[in-house]
Length: 289
Image (cartoon, rainbow, N blue to C red; front, top):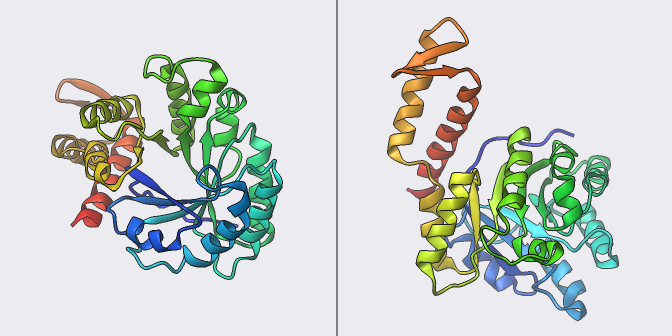
């Protein structure tokens, strides 16, 4: 079954616990590009069934901007709660827009979920968290496992524990780079882990800028006050937008696959990145107005 692959801004996301449907509209109106209702880490085992029922019933209908992507993070599909989440996903009265898969270890998990969505003719997209050593090794295969996959998320805290390293930028730079590489190969968005020190705005901005420089398209927030900063970091700046427009116009007027522009040799593959940059900028500008 085909899914919508329209380029959209995914500059920021924020979680809301599945047990608190009263928080869904507030999160949707926070300025973020993605709201993820969590059935996994934010929910105690005794509350899983209640959170599941509330999330699938209330998130699709929650009041808020239509442009915000509505996501439910289910439990690992290798657990009983994860299997119950899948059943709820497939039988919900209104299909959920996107489902996030945590603790993935390989592409077969993604393919299995995608096959179920095909069988039940659900239009649901998939986001996949790369947060295990096995997933890092299989990142390229996971990214290519289904056309429903639209974004890879970096789960830095769990990854650091799995790799037995510190949760610092330098210690996790290889992991981040590998995930960016896998996402770029398939044209997917790639979203960095939230910065966990709410009082360190400068530290968050520094890490967000490093993430953007590395190739990430967005980063998570733990509080709404972080969202404007993150949206700002991951929105293409005016100079980049102007340059991309001029290069695309110059390519349109040329007859070959090569172009010397302002003294630099450019080839056609740059068109894809520039077209994506402009699509994100234009959509983000409309959304933020």
